[in-house]
Length: 320
Ligand SMILES: Cc1cc2nc3c(=O)[nH]c(=O)nc-3n(C[C@H](O)[C@H](O)[C@H](O)COP(=O)(O)O)c2cc1C
Image (cartoon, rainbow, N blue to C red):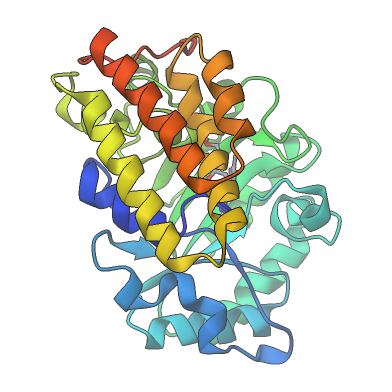
């Protein structure tokens, strides 16, 4: 997730939590004229990714630029790269990149034909149901079936929806018989119950991707794998994770304002696990110095540890 799950985060996360088999790294935009430099792909340098297997992701609409970056990444040792056809950001989509390319079936066809010919490794893709309408994916499926893809990750919303409204499980279900590639389900898995609902409905799916749900509850991947929530001392684990992440970012980000911005950003999701949280969040947001921020956060964790040491009081709704 761009802005959140960079290599520092992934490393510290994997030191404190389990359950994920791999991470799709936040997208890297392809460079014009096939010019890739090592610093462009710093986030996926193998030496920065020793704890959790990673699939690098590329955002691009130019096949030659895409295949050049993909080949650079294969040369670094990756066997698969992922093409981002899901990003809903208007800045991205208006340039016919990310989910903005989904209405243009012919362009996707040409892109895959041109890039796959030149690529040294395998390709997976991440898509939504369409940019404007869900009819777009139905048109796209026969095109995708023509190419050797490792897997297709589907987030069943349109790009225009961004993250609003519910996931469209009916359309996702309709897509499944029409696809010959392994499919990964992605969207709104926030609790073990959500996962159970979805895995009962889509029995043919055995690959799952979680985004915001694990940022709100970092224990979720483990709980899903274990099939139950048998963890103790969660608040203490969270506090240790938070402390380690703070130290890691303090060592890599330039200056206290970047550090504070990064750490405060995490609470956008993490705060969802705690209710009510508004008062504490205000204090955390208001802190202007790293020491003040840490003090507020540690006080919060210590109070929480006294009241809810086993379960994270997670206030999410369930899937229907
Ligand atoms: C802040 C943010 C950044 C994201 N960055 C990426 C990204 O770089 N690449 C990608 O494939 N998806 C990205 N996503 C989308 C998520 O991977 C995922 O598809 C989406 O959040 C739905 O899944 P979830 O309900 O489990 O979060 C991002 C989502 C958010 C909210």
